[in-house]
Image 1 (cartoon, each protein chain N blue to C red):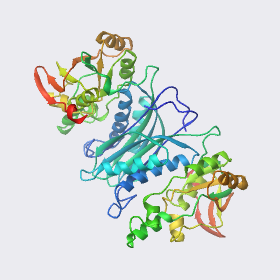
Image 2: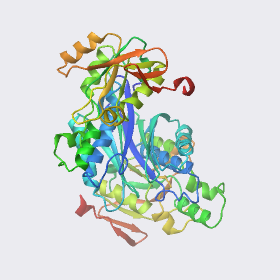
Image 3: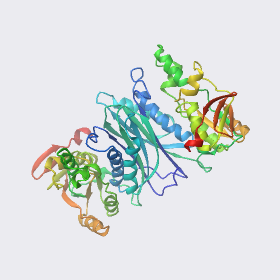
Image 4: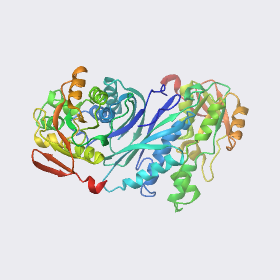
Length: 270
Length: 270
């Protein structure tokens, strides 16, 4: 039971699955809980929202320490000001953590994927591929507390960035959960636009493939008609400067430099 | 993005797992979606709530028809006035459906498990064991549309019953998701009371074991200080008369007739 929220309410859920979203032979199961929570909180961030409350559902085989799994989800929620309002526990052959969250947005309303217009500047909130590079580092023998590995284990949702971008008039946002290329494709399809990338900022140790396809970095892609307003809003909020990556264009292709990376496909798909 | 709800907000989630909550060799996977939704809507019913919106998360192996799974969850939500606000899809080795729901409660506030007091009358909203009996009927060769089998495949959350009970002053409620004995134990532990059952109403074809232990009937157990007020409220709402099953008592045991069924254990556990 929650007190009545103010304004519009955001409601979303994401799941993290052992063996798909986390190699549980290489990482503690608490990391799966953390990542399920961050995936959901990141959905709120991408709409310019603030988390209010979360519910954690854990489905687990009998030999999994569900208290540890839950502790990771709870820690991620608490670190980002999100109350854990309840949960549910089931038996299952595969470990699956689902986190549903409620969020609030300010008076300006929620930012959607569908608002990008040709001419908008495109930014990311940070360099990409750190999660994929962290996984590779762990597999090459790096310890669990290695900073590169922590980028894989303990990503952060960009809540402050999303709020600042929304307040400054961002036209569209999406979080990088499945890799920049796939998530840009979603934003472009929802907005019926194309994307011309100038540069793909890479996290330390990340390849271009990691940065374009790695996913689970949870940086935000922001489309903005007035780039200076975004830069100023981030500065005022004490955030690192957003990284300009390109421009929203007419058409239905994703280009990097002069080269076509992908047909975005929204002409056929809707 | 949802319009701002009025009053208190209820927020809960439940999962349904293939092989645990549904024998997917004997039933369509849409039934798993339906049952995940009903499990969650039933949580709202047990607090006297009304569903506002749901988010459906499906984790599935590649060979599962996820559209069919989702259709079951969506059908259950729609039938009970609940908007499906979104969803998420992941790969997983096991089919798991999680439904999170938001609900509203009236001015009287939410009913909890913890309010039962010695002397309160105990009711259920309908006979029990129908889900277990339906599974047995299916395994004995009954068709998918057999009414007994439908009790297993397509249970209903008792939303109107929960609202009427809450308005009439119910002191505590719980839904029968894991079997009457286990769910009564939870209500008793939360309220620090005992339970004296006079009778366990059985659905057609259900054994006493089915009725006490079968679960997933989603009838509500209602504790009420004024039994006549509950009966009148159900009558006014056009609902079947609630079935009196016993009385809340001092102590920490669950009795049926004169016989002790279980030590409720709350003295030690909580």
